[in-house]
Length: 139
Image 1 (cartoon, rainbow, N blue to C red):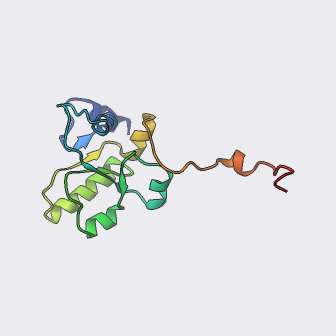
Image 2 (image 1 turned 90 degrees about the vertical axis):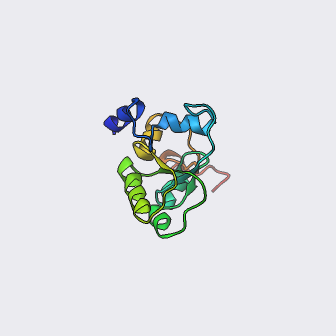
Image 3 (image 1 turned 180 degrees about the vertical axis):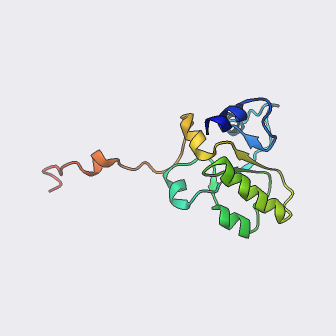
């Protein structure tokens, strides 16, 4: 993953691959060449993983559903478990003849989290909160 992150931050990045910081700038409306038209961010991960945490503003369409269904309108940015996950999905979509601009996140959602970028989703209780003794009022 570290190699993918270093490659994504360099200037030699393939045009369809975005680093986590580049995606953050796009979310903020300040692309490298000024404001860009917004793209729809699709999280390809399983629904339970998406519900737990995801890139703010993204929509969950697991890769199997996206490949077998009709694509949403507009440009897309895919966020997978890994770079390979989203790249494989793009390959399937292009093989089906989809010609729109589809970019994806280098390193997947793990790279986003690794850089401590903002996430949305449910906040779950950790083990200490789940196992705390009941208070006298709760008993």
